[in-house]
Image 1 (cartoon, rainbow, N blue to C red):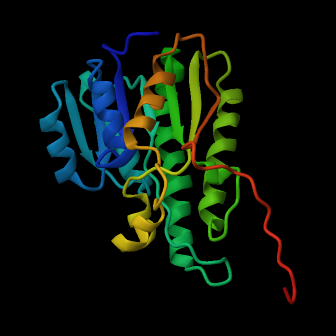
Image 2: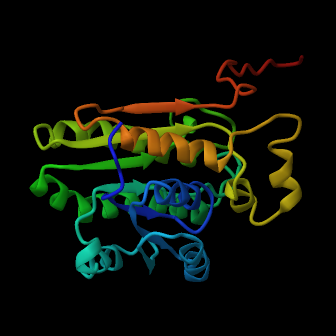
Amino acid sequence: MSSLKSATVMITGASSGFGAAAARRFAADGARLILCARRLDRLKALKDELSVPVHVCALDVRDREAVFALVASLPPAFAAVDVLVNNAGLAAGLEPAQAASLDDWELMVDTNIKGLMFCTRAILPGMVQRKQGHIINIGSVAGRYPYPGGNTYGGTKAFVEQFSLNLRNDILGSNVRVTNIAPGMCETEFSLVRFKGDPEKAASVYKGMKPLSSADIADCIHWVAALPAHMNINYLEVMPVNQAFAGFSVHREGV
């Protein structure tokens, strides 16, 4: 395994969930951290908790100009990003496509697709120039396996998978790595956001089963980043043992 003690790691969506857990996991190795999210107060509290150099930035990844301005203004000690964790993302709503909110669809596309593209495009040229780096994109099993109401969310995560694979071809020879990590059911603020803050609906998603935790996914993120530099994990799918992808839907008239 490679040492990440001298690495600079940038994490989007770092105020909670996978992002905050990944920050703690990389901090345990002594890495320098750039933590980005819309909720600056949470980032500051996380920074106070960690004993490594941390640069916090209020950022909405949907704002292209803000993303590029942030990267251009990074302090010298943080300017050479070694690992970018594109974690900012969300699901909004669970209605069927014919009844879904277009505002929810647009929010998911702008965050999960465009935000990830903006951050990647802002950071990647420096990695290619330095001939080292790692882009870690947080996808979802929803990008491969459909479920009712997962319409646009699943579509955005399918984009993340394909974009990650295509990046590998574009940067071949640069020594820059690209990984798509696709978690299954994980108890974070994900369902709370999807159901517009309804705690009962959010809790019902995980009723009667043990989901993954943020720390579980943070371990996966850290593992792929710490592998020897000549190794690239293209795609890593992780599910709780009580979740599977089997089952076709069949509608039967009059039954």
